[in-house]
Length: 484
Image (cartoon, rainbow, N blue to C red; front, side, top):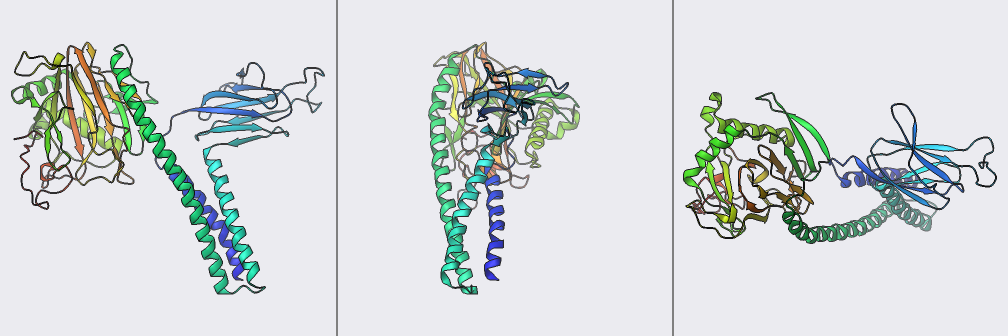
C-alpha cells in the first residue's frame, strides 16, 4: 500500500518541479515579439522552408538553396507566424520517398526562446525550446531519484512498512534537493558571468554612443498609445525595455512649451549644484552631477485652475500608476526638479566654462537587486524641455539603449518589481552624454513608494530609515534635495 502511494506521489512531485521551472523563468515578463529559429533536417531528404501568409495561405520561399539532410537553416521571425517544411524530390529519380506525394509539415513560432525545429525521418516536426528543455531536464532528474527510491524499497523486504516508505521518500527528497541545488548553482554562476560581461561591455557602449552625435534612438520593441485621463489625448509610447523589475518607455509630446516655461521660471532664482545620496543616509555634492538643479514645490491647490506645474505633475503620476499599478499618490513625494546642463558647464552665475556638462552613469534608486527600502524611489520620469544641437543623449548602457533628446518627449523608467518587492539589478543605470553644443533643460520627477502626506520623503534618510528611528534628526537636507 505504502509503495503504491509512493509511486502515485512521484508524478505530483514532477508536476510541482515543472511548474516551478516555469515560474523561475520569469513571472510577468513581457518578451520581444521577434524570435530566432533553427530548423534541423533529419528527414533523409532535401527540404525547403516557406512562410505561410495568414491572409491567403500563399507560400513565400525562405530557404535558398535547399536544406540538405543533416544540415540546418536559421531564420528570424515573429511569434505566431506559420512556416511549412516541404520534402523535395530526389535530384536523380525525381520522386519523393513516398511515391504518392512529397510530404510536408507546418510549425508555428511560439513565445519561448531558443526554438529548434527537428524534422525527423517520419517527417514529423519536433518543436524544442527553453521550456521543453527545462522540462526534459526535470524529468531526467526525477527519474534518476525515482529509481533510487524504488531500489531502496526493493532492497528492504517484500513488505514495505511505513518506516521504510517514509525513509525512501526522505531519501528521494534529498536526492532531488541536491540535484536542484546543483542546477541552481550552475544557473547562478551563468547569470553572474552574464551580468559582469554586460556591465563591462556597457562602458564601451557608453563611450561609443556618446561620441556618435548622429546616432538615432534605439528602436522600440513595441509601440502603443497612452490615454491621458485629464486631457483625453492619445500619446505615442515606445517600449524600449520591459522586465519585471525594469521598464524603459519613451513618450512623445508629454510636456508642453507652457509647462516647460513655468518650470524654468520657477527654478531660475534657486538653481544650485545637484546632490546625490552619500551612502551613509545623507546627501552630498558629487562629481557625477555636473548639472544645476532646483526643486519646485507643486501648487496642488491650483490644480483645478489648470496651473501648468500641477498639470504636468498630475500627468506624471497618472502615467506611472498606469504602468506600475501601485496606486501611488502625489502626497509626500519629492518636488519636481528642474535640471539644466550648459555647454562647457556654464554656471548659473554666468560666464565660467569648464569641461563639457554631462551626467555620469548612476542609478536613481537602488539597482543591486536587493529588496526595496521602504519609501524609496521606484521610478523616474525625465521630460525634455530644451535640447542641445549636439550631444545630451540619455544612455542606459547596461541595457544597450540610447535615447536622443527630443523636445517635449519624456523617458519613463521604473526599477521595482511590484510582485516580488525586489529592485532592478542594473538595467536602468543611466547617464547623460556631454552637452557639446547648446543647452539641455529637463524636468524630472523621482517617484517614491510608501510615502504619505503625514510621513513624507523628507522624514526618511537615503537608507530608507526614519530620522526619528535612527536618532538622527537632521542631515541638513532641504526639501528640494539640496544641502542647507
